[in-house]
Amino acid sequence: MLARMTNRSPRALGIDVGGSGIKGAVVDLDTGEFACDLIVIPTPQPATPDAVAAAIADLARRASWDGPVGVALPSVIKDQVALSAANVDPAWVGTNAHELLARHLGTASISVLNDADAAGLAEVAFGGAAVRDGAVIFLTFGTGIGSAFFVDGVLFPNTELGHMTVGNAEAEHQASSAVKDRLGLSFPQWAGRVDTVLREFERLFNPAAFIVGGGISEDADAWVPLLTVDTPVIPATLRNRAGIVGAAMAAAVHLTP
Image (cartoon, rainbow, N blue to C red; front, top):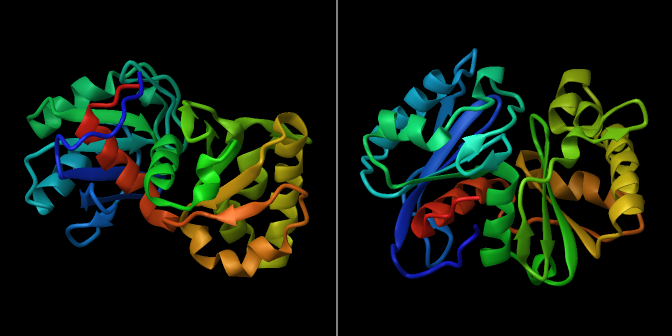
């Protein structure tokens, strides 16, 4: 179940596993700010469980960290077991991520959760008020499209809207930032694709707002104003730091979705 933040630990190491890079930093849990330099390691290819876990252990060593560790994975996570594998090797499906990482890190003080859920939880704790007011869909645009549902700041975990079919293809196959890069789309061209996806999400779920994060949210001024969906679209306050911060929060409270 999801736990509330406590003052049990003022800092934790947060790690966000993506399709192209594994990012991590020690996080000050009172402020949500990084307490060390950001560390980035290329995601191993193929991104098998043991290869990714070894890279995570390397990142922890680089951070000189031996305290609680939170890991955000691009997977549905239930009872610390990965039930899906988006943009990582299919061997993750059925893997007990906690046991795997404990073996590589040499500690049991580990929490694992879905990457978009981690980012959304960080936004609830340290971002703008909109994510805590009513029914909100938090979306991350990167290698894929991650999603997290909140009602008055309370998470419904493991939603996977990026894999929902919109028209004839999955949403993330049409409108992830990776698609923008791969096809060389301009921001107006890509924003049209995002609009199509958001309109379908809007039709089905009627949220009070969409909060958008991920790496491309750093350029939110270049594309968010181009969107024409009726529901307000608000750039995430934490931008691309959110997954790391949310993973660290999970470690501090031993969150186990």
